[in-house]
Length: 457
Image (cartoon, rainbow, N blue to C red; front, side, top):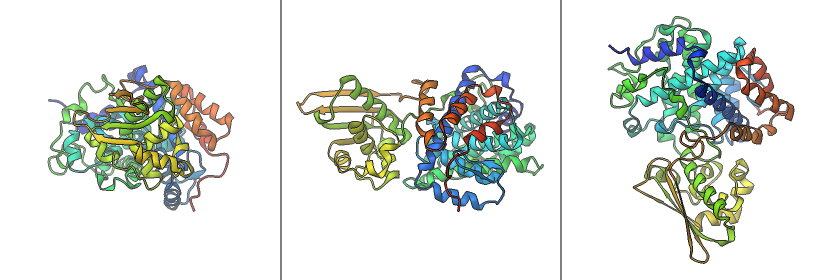
């Protein structure tokens, strides 16, 4: 008889060794870590970051844990704030089959405990692999369509399990204790799409990281909890949040097929489902060398799900709307030929030319034959000629992966706002040679800001 999914995943996380992880999966973990740090440093530009920093500073008065690009807060406060920083400006990773951002929950919790305990870089990498793999696999077992039909949002529901797995692995919990940590994590699973259109969707991520941290630390104290939370018939994750799910998929080829390699990276700020739009439009404009003034109209086809979320905001209200607006993303790419956080500052998104282009030049419609992130782009030129491009897999997806150089470039784009050049070089070096790092404290010391941090007052 196959092992119950909760206990099987818990045993996997508790017994995972560095040697068990293939190099391709290790390399993806390093990419995901550097990408999360890039997003965390950029996250200080988030409109709501100061509010979350105030909450994080109020959680406790101790100062034992480092904030990415900031100063020190309590263990809980740093976990919460770092998780928000990673997701604050909408450019972190995503596991598209479950529409779940994974690193905001897993990485901050792991970094906080690794710093506190002085864990080695090798141990940190193993913990990250455990947390990332557990998160993705629990999501795969959900039957995402049934889960989404009930309104649930993945990061706040399955993210706590990944955070708990990474912390449990660093603390050396055995399989039974890790299964109890999953029971405690599941008791905190929450977050629905009722929050869509507000920054609360990003709060789901940071609360998920803190929930997983609490779960593992409480399980370490032998706190009693169910060890079969995923499959419990009365109130289990798969029965209550879905339609019973397919728990066998959560453990299929566990330890052999590394599903964390399906976690996609984002090269550009803006919503995950708009990455296909950016990939297609950049490719079209660059390959045909189209001057902005030659464009009469841009017609974009999105999947119905993407259209409902991102195709109805030609008149965006502010930064958050701009980040999730397909109209604005297309207008910015057309005019600026880039899409960085500079395009999401008020001076840019309030520019009358961009506002006019978003309304008058960009047309977006749902296409029933498209699904997920698939996108079509048609550019009509002033002479009546048409240029067309289609994207099935955006850059950063498993099918069209980005290189280490791409992620390093992203890190170096956003790090200078918080860190001096020498530290930036040192951080990249430490992540490249993560297994040689004697203590995570060294990495976190480099990541603390040399200048003023976001106020936690």
